[in-house]
Image 1 (spheres, each protein chain N blue to C red):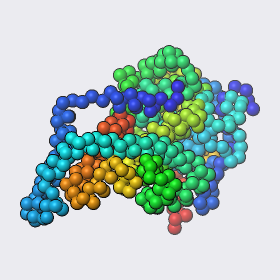
Image 2: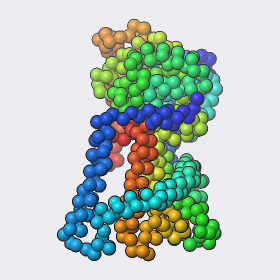
Image 3: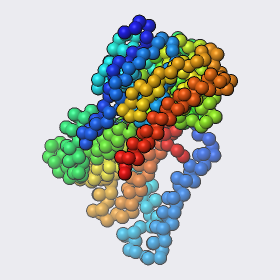
Image 4: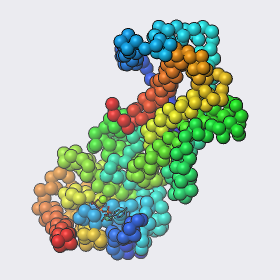
Length: 270
Length: 275
Ligand SMILES: Nc1ncnc2c1ncn2[C@@H]1O[C@H](COP(=O)(O)OP(=O)(O)OP(=O)(O)O)[C@@H](O)[C@H]1O
Ligand SMILES: [Mg+2]
């Protein structure tokens, strides 16, 4: 194993077994890749190819059927504060205010009150949540909720930030706003980020590298390097010819997988 | 610090302020329906003209209420019934929530206890009364146990549903923040199951109240149940109805001043129920 790689996924295969019918679903098949410290890596692939499964395995919320996952050269045995996660469903707690949601991880880790407040204040400012501190989640828009979830995760300063389609439930405009904000924010962060998305644009703009997955059972189809360094990426990058070629390549790659998946489904049904 | 979710909720419940308009509105909505009921009652009396010994006049019933208030029976009996129901709640609610949590969270506990709980749930509290009397005698304990029995089951079943319907992603979120199982229980399951637990307590109280009244009729020499049962042997229909009104009003007050503020401060504040 290489030194310096923060996340190391090696030959991971994962089955789900239905408790009642005993049927098994092969979600991931022999997946291997590594992510370096501080890297921003995106994962794209057809629906149901096992992207969420992969993140849950790295988070330690499930154990892989086969294979090994290491973070900082230590095997993952369960969830821990070194691997934060942002979920698609805005998983902030309805019974906590914005402030108390963001401070939750710090509370859990027993960070003293003053230190905690200082950190929370910093992230509220950084992520643009001023004025919402005492609101409850139901009073917030989807975009705001997801900002809170991101702030909550970042406040713990995890080595790895796992993001499972965090913007999927948002409208297109909010989604673009948050994407651009995350891109800017990531330049100030040293955390390693693993970001799952359905959107090729999102993956192309955010990721230093993009992992393209095959249809289920998910395998790594290819890993593509972004031609533009993160520091130089912004909204105008979308019109850069090199970037457009890169983006189109990703699009074709995913599209091919989606089409075979759809075709197979048709054959199976008939 | 973990587990401060509920403490915060209680703080907020205490801080509820009353605005005057809201108070007027509350009076209209809370008195209006009873006024309609009175109209129907008087309508029956005036148009159907039943035997006045069996269907008394509103005024007679009010007179009776004033009479038992003056001679001290009302306050004495009411406070005894309230004390009994409070003790029953103090026993049944914590045990019910605890067992509901156990069943909701642990499969082994569920497999062991659920069949028993289903079995006993099908036996009405009143059916236990003879046995409770043999075991505990004609005492307060018998009444409290009978009331607790009815309260226990709705609390258990609703707590189970509450625990099991807290979205899984909340647990995952707390675990990825480094939270232990204990954090999940105190910060997620406890507040998350509260809407269902409150339904359980409310349903359960109705059963407890029934068990209490029934047990007081047979076991006690005081309390609201005794009041109306004793009146029957003297054919005091007005006193029976006065007693029934007291029972209904007492429950309405308990609901209004105990359960509703708790709801306001917690699940409504959190937006878990819409208005
Ligand atoms: N708990 C489960 N039990 C059984 N099968 C499951 C379970 N969770 C996921 N699966 C199956 O495993 C496969 C991969 O699921 P996963 O949620 O990881 O896909 P995904 O790539 O995240 O999909 P999407 O893009 O739609 O979110 C799917 O076919 C799904 O039906
Ligand atoms: Mg998914």
